[in-house]
Image 1 (cartoon, chains in turn blue, purple):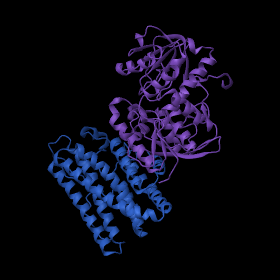
Image 2 (cartoon, chains in turn red, brown):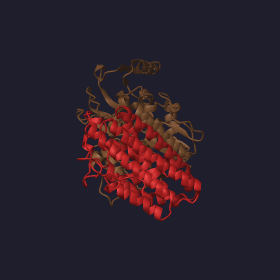
Image 3 (cartoon, helix red, strand yellow):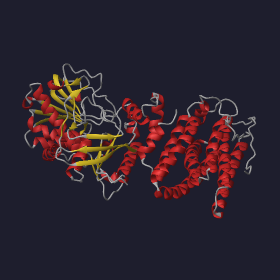
Image 4 (tube, helix red, strand yellow):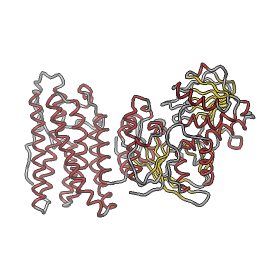
Amino acid sequence: MERVVCLDPSPSVCTSALPTASIWQDVLAHAVTGELLAAMNYTSLSEICNDPAEIAEALEHAQNERGHAAAFAAEGRKIGVEVANNVEAKHWKRLRASFLRCVEERDFTGCLIIQEIMLESFALASYSRVGKVGPGTLGQTFARIAAEEEEHIGHAVAILSKERARDAQRFDEKVYRLHLDVMGTLAQMLAKDCRDGHCEVCHASCVKPALFEVSLSAVQLRGASLQQYLKTLDMLGIPGQVTLAWVTQLPV
Amino acid sequence: MNNVDFALIGHQDSWTAIAGVLAVLRGPERAPLPDDEIREIFPWIPPRTVCCVDVNSIAGARASGVYIDSFIPPDRLDSTCIRENLARVRGAAANAIHAGAKIVSLGGFSSILIEGDFDQLPAAQDTVFTTGNTLTVAYIVQGVKKMCALNGRNLGNSTLLVVGATGDIGSGCARCLAPLVKRVLLCARNVERLRRLAAEFQTDGIQVEVATDLQRFSTQADVVICAASLPSPALLLGRIARGAIVCDAGYPKNLSPTAEMPDAKVFFGGLGQITGGLKFAPDFRGILNRHPFPDVVHGCLLEGVALALEGRFEPFSKGRGAITPDRVAEMEAIAARHGIYLAPLYNDDGPLEPQNV
């Protein structure tokens, strides 16, 4: 499998004059990590596509996600921080492993569900919140990329809705199986505090307790992410009472 | 699209109630969510169907429906959250339309927020809405009469106070009971609306007094209906007669737990009971309808159920201040035909009727 990104888990120094720079440094680190993971996922997805147009599309998506990562890293430099990333961090690694299982099974639909429904819902909701409070171009970049992720979701919903129309029960069972795997990890990642140890992305201690200093909160980001996820599942046509039970059963 | 007969739109009135709903959804094998997690996650849940509801009529009819929660948090019912809550009610209505419901009842604050103006809801060709307020009025009035009978009171000698008198439910109750009592006291915030309502009664020779402040009435009431749209139980009645009969018809409840009402006979009004059979899937019996008796549901929701069982898919209750005694009689007859009657009376201390105590 092609190596698509340079992994850089090394801690970095904050030399910014912006008092909240070290918080943004971690927020950006999570965003860059997520984008790089998405780029890796799309590259892997291209390897199971048969149609040349699908291959090209997956690789284009991968390139876009690398562009997002670069844009976030550039925002870090603007405020005087070096933005690290770590796709090997424990939660991200598990998310990647879930995706690769679908790749191994050549399960194109499963790959789309994980990347474009679950992970993109999380990205869209989080980026939108950050976009509202981020200073200057940092906020604008988050808002712009959130809009692009929303397009990804819309694109995936169009494809997956057709897939669901063929066999709704089978489709819903697949989403549920992937939900248990992926959303359980995301729920742990989004928990209001990292009870099971350091996330391996934040450059020092966990950024979550400090988010209030930039008008964010872990609770808000989790809530917005779950809300977006439910709305995306609604768009797919999965009954609301079913997805409500799924979400309420997630670990906290 | 499920094409159900009816949809019931509601919201929970306490965090305890919400915890109960979430515990059912999580299932017995998972630990209940901690209270702080519930308060943090719940407000983010978009309106959606919580369960399916099947109702049987004693006349043999059956109706299938859904309960849709707007997920309005109980501590966000106040006026500062109107825009957010209206969006939730609209979202819940869109869910009902999507489910193919032929008739939709709006429970609690859902109808208060839109004030009976269905133009605020998403347009729908095959779905009609009803506030359900006519059947609520019917059960409040029936409850007052029953409570008077239980306590040996003569309604004809009574002074009736209606708090929230210019609201849809308050004005409906006043119209039904004013001709039966000695004097009527009407209390609400809007003076103009109060005067208009009082004028209706004065032309019929009914003694009526209005005030925006409960302390301003010249006489004490011995029958009280609390039908104010309060976001939390905060009403202190103050000057009412010792031993007064008090109907708390609010959702959430109107009366403050600290209200001092010596010897008052308080009961919760506006509730009906389905006797032909009620099933929830998943099983939310006693969770969504937390009452000391089985199959008890708020009148506003039951109106949609009764109309569905009757096959009358029409916006029976709409607007504000249009509930008349004739319409109330018509609605309670429809409900009774299908075995939906006034629920046994109770309050926080338990059942009030001798056979149920």
